Amino acid sequence: MLNVVVFGSGRGSNFKAVLDAMADGGIPLARISLVISNNASAGILDIARSRGITALHISQKQFETEALFVAALLETLRSHGTGLVVLAGYMKRLPPPVVHAYRNRIINIHPALLPRFGGQGMYGIHVHAAVLAAKEILSGATVHLVDEEYDRGPILLQQTVPVLPDDTPETLAARVLRVEHQLLPDAVRLFSEGRVDLNGNIMPLRSMQE
Ligand code: GRF
Image (cartoon, rainbow, N blue to C red; front, side):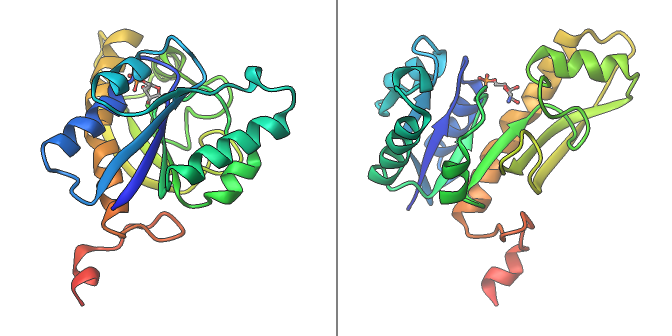
């Protein structure tokens, strides 16, 4: 069983999409063992608690030094048997020692077609405003492996959505979010089936049966 730990800072709709996929039997080889948020009042913590999942507020601000924060994160991840870390609307950069300890086992969902419209400052509604400002006709969502930089690691899954002439950042965000809610559960399932290689390539199912 793959133990998944989810990090989030906000409302938690992507986390809930993964949880619902698991509840529907869509991801039989994985379970969510813990949710961590840097924001004590984040909706993602409330969703976790309502579904009986351990939910912890862990923030750098609670620690004297980054080293103590990192040690607390690593111990928490270790004690929960973490096999996969999922960033679902986590607004902080994971400390490099955590990225190193879980290299190629950390994924992030981003509401645009990376590598474009990613990186520092490209989060939430800003992403969609930038897509519209660039007069793109396509946008979409991306799940990628996480490395030491924002939104840069190998891409696992992408799904496009059309940008419509009368779109606002909000209407585009809503259309992309619906695709995110399909893409992230798919990525967790692929990981749980051992079908993601170290470069973020997805092995076809037939290779599992050979
Ligand atoms: C999502 O749009 C995700 O792509 C981005 O942050 C947002 C989080 O939304 N990284 P939610 O908390 O999952 O609803």
